[in-house]
Amino acid sequence: MRAADMPYCYPYPHPAVTTDTVLFTVRDDRLAVLLVRRGAPPFENEWALPGGFVEPDESLEEGALRELAEETGIHGVYLEQLYTFGQPDRDPRERVISVAYFALAPSEMLAPAAGSDARETGWFLLSELPSLAFDHGDIIALAHQRLRAKLEYSTVAFSLMTEPFTLGELQKVHEIIRGEALDKRNFRKHILSLGLVEETGHVRSSGQRKPARLYRLQQPGTLQYYR
Amino acid sequence: MRAADMPYCYPYPHPAVTTDTVLFTVRDDRLAVLLVRRGAPPFENEWALPGGFVEPDESLEEGALRELAEETGIHGVYLEQLYTFGQPDRDPRERVISVAYFALAPSEMLAPAAGSDARETGWFLLSELPSLAFDHGDIIALAHQRLRAKLEYSTVAFSLMTEPFTLGELQKVHEIIRGEALDKRNFRKHILSLGLVEETGHVRSSGQRKPARLYRLQQPGTLQYYR
DNA sequence: ACAAAAGTGTTCTCGATACACCCATGC
DNA sequence: GCATGGGTGTATCGAGAACACTTTTGT
Image (tube, rainbow over the protein chains, first blue to last red):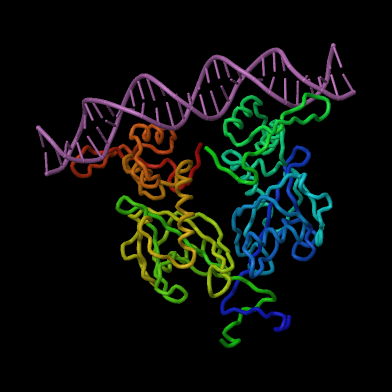
């Protein structure tokens, strides 16, 4: 490469900095993760997390959201910083430090052929992940752990759902994340005692059964902590 | 600056990456933080967290420990990653992304005139912090919040103490972090019910009072989570 | 009528809290 | 003998867990 192709020079070595985002959703009663197929080496054609290099004038969070939009067409997800991965050898090209983000969205929000300007994208069940580029398997494992932990003391589950919802749907999401069945009466008692949801006054009649009451968040769009 | 002084060139802009470490200890029955006085602009002569640029061949954690050792002579602390701060304007010189670490050490472990190869260092009570460089005030506030949170479901408090210890000393550390007095009987019941500590069989006779039983961790040096 | 999910209360256990007095020592 | 922190038990309360039957609808 010629010197003119390397115009950004510094007095000491600088690593590259990327963001990588683990976007979870619930599909077919399972947790799924969004992956993109890499279009260039290293790991060409393998699956990886959506992400890329941070631009000079954007924050890390803006970078994560921009990459997600560019590569997958997805906007408006819940996003929080997860962990920063910086082992010197995690990328064979050069030193790359990745600030990993953790994102949640209801599957209803995700356009099926989501704007893929750039890449082939795919949803993979967490239990059926393909071989992944870099240390992205570790990143997903950590994100999954974080999701399970936050379920117990925050309103993260609502970020995987659309309003209004039934208590049965909410319980289902909790069961999927926790990986175990919950008692219906105890679950309802617990959720209602938190005082975070309220009845809309409507019901949803879906199929061959008793219609269920619909609820909404009292403070939609806000992640709340309790306990 | 001449081109020869800028030998590290890249095809697109790279940010600088630093680590900054919030090292807590307990001094005079208060939480204190280690700061170093800056020796160069920006914020020359102001107080800042110990830290610096990550070297190409070290992990982020190794970098944090190296900077702590170089600037303050301190080794062997408990260390965990806290958060990554990357606002584009947080450093006036260039884009600098800081991976912040959270560290704990018992004050007994800290040599008084700790090897200061490089910098003037000082311990500041958390309640009496000076004006700080960059966004280091925010970093300390987040670290304090993390410390308080982890106290409730992990063994972090032991990282601020030396073994063996009395239950009175352990309670004091908890009270300092929580900022409130605790009931002695309930505290002891709670700690002993966790099954993390055991009696050494010795007592400590200190001053004009009843000697206290000494305890040790059953698994020293290991951070454990409970609940 | 029946299949399928909605909706509803009580009991028990256990951990968290509140609370007060005697003990062993050094001075 | 007294000042100082060490050490101990009980009663109460509330959250979480276990547990089964009736209701409403569409077919």
